[in-house]
Every structure is written in structure tokens, then in C-alpha cells.
Image (cartoon, rainbow, N blue to C red; front, side, top):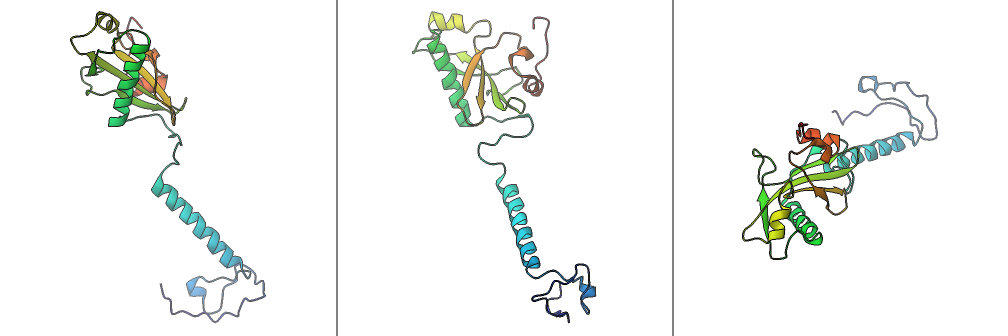
Length: 195
């Protein structure tokens, strides 16, 4: 851009020149008259708008803001440990495990990693998790019994800023009705005859 250009336009100080009228000698540069102060305000407004859009794009959504669409979520190490602790607390509270019992991660489905399935549901604005655990031996009799028939699977949910809550156990086979429809679709839970 040519910064040496000095249009031979009359000064606009104190005048309200009509919009759309070109400056003489500045037509090739697209200069137009603007009311005094309007150009400064307009530039300031545009600058602020531009800065806000750049900042929001760089920073992303506000803390605690919910994503706009349902999506799969990769569990962090912290989330995995919190889910495991929530599962153990649920089992201890329901007297289905002894304090001396221990669990390890197991696969939700044979092709899944040793981690929970996680997803965000944009309709109910909650995160959902489905985890499977293996009881380590030796284990108490009540823990062995409680891990049968889907008792090793935990269904969890939390709001954007809330704690993880265990909803309950998942029955075998894993039916889509255990979680909201968008989450069941993301996890590819099929409807079986027993569902």
C-alpha cells in the first residue's frame, strides 16, 4: 500500500461531507468523505470487533462452556483415576466390595483400549463414560459375586463443571438404552434381542 499518498481533499474538520463522494485526487485510492469523528469511531469499532473474534478463536470456548455438538471424548489420566475412584466408592457404599479389594481397567469391548468410553451429549449437556473393571485376586466373596452379570461395568455422567457420578451398572449385552441416544450412537451400541 502506498503510504506516501496525500489526497488533495478539503479538511473535514467541522463539516459533514456526504458519504459516497470521492476526494479529488484520491478516487484511485477509494477514499470517501465521512462525518468528522465517524471514521475514528468506525475504525475503533471494527478494531474491537476484530480483536474479539481473533481472541475468541485463539482461546476457544469459555471455561465451563458446553460444546455445540455431541462428540467422543478422549479420557485424560486424571479422569480415568477419578472414574476408577468413583466406581470403587460406589461398590463400597453399596457393600458390594471390601476395602481390601482392588480393581484394574478392563476393555469395554474386545476391540477397545484399556480405558473407558467417553462422550459429550449436547442435548443434555452432560459427559458420559462407560468403564469396565477387572477384580484382582484374591478378592472377597461379595466382590466376586457383585462383579457378575455386568457388575464390572460402570455407567457415569457429569455436568460440564460437576463431579463424576456413577449411575449404575450396565447389563450384558450392552444395550443403547443405558445412555442417551446420541451417546449410544457415538459408542456404536447395537440393539440386541435381550435389550
